[in-house]
Length: 220
Ligand SMILES: [Zn+2]
Image (cartoon, rainbow, N blue to C red; front, side, top):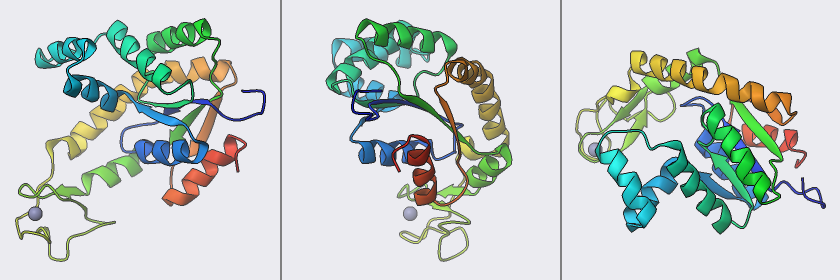
């Protein structure tokens, strides 16, 4: 932590569908940090056609995972642009990436202030995601419980019957949760051993969850 006690560098972990991106944005804004989301940064490099972006695009087009050294290079550049004050969302994803991140931070005399783990039970994630529907015509997204269309499963904007994305089907969600757990458990143990892990209950209202996160960070 910095001399004045301000939080400058955070990692956010949490299962898909836990609302991690939303909370990461809110907490970053509150603390004056730049939110660095791996997916967004990779897409932006590709869009700008940078040398790194061209490398990334090559892997994506071939349907391959972007290898760790490339991801690290992209993230290092982004952390530097952020002036060392950032919230990492979606990185590190594996123990190997966490170890590389440590080396990268140490080389700059930076350290992590905390790692926030947003916890939501599988059953609730399945319930949240399987209720999502999208309009195949105008792409508007609905939620059958929290943001339902006015008429049964028909788009409010254009009257088109809503569909469920293949990604939002229960089997697919459960598989993603299994992959997440297998990848993340070693990471959780790694940060817990260093006393950096902060577990936060990710169930409830958006504002309340933000408050809990700021509280465990000593910021509220
Ligand atoms: Zn529509």
